Image 1 (cartoon, helix red, strand yellow):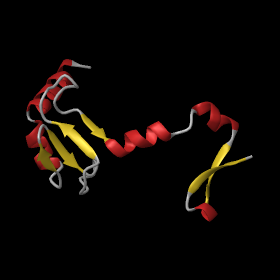
Image 2: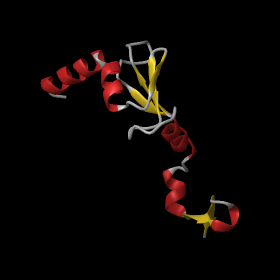
Image 3: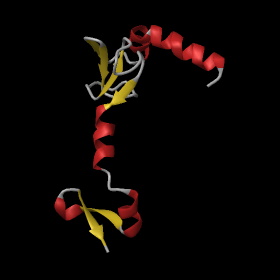
Image 4: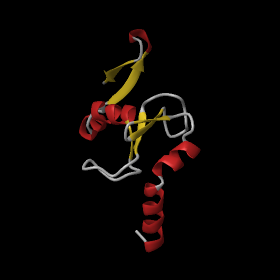
Length: 99
């Protein structure tokens, strides 16, 4: 990362709460985190932004809880290459393997 980008990242992290208040205004502070629905500023509690440095990571680091859960449930790449997945309208959107 270039020096300018590193410096900008540090400055944004120091002002994480102010950045969140401005760009993620539909969220709110809870303890050391800013909670909001998603990166598009939707209402909710799926995405959180760390407001202070901690042993878990630096201030400004964000995580979307729903995206993380979806990635854990995603089939591995080898399974995807062997078969196609399709949405079954008869089973309320449950994924089924199509051979």
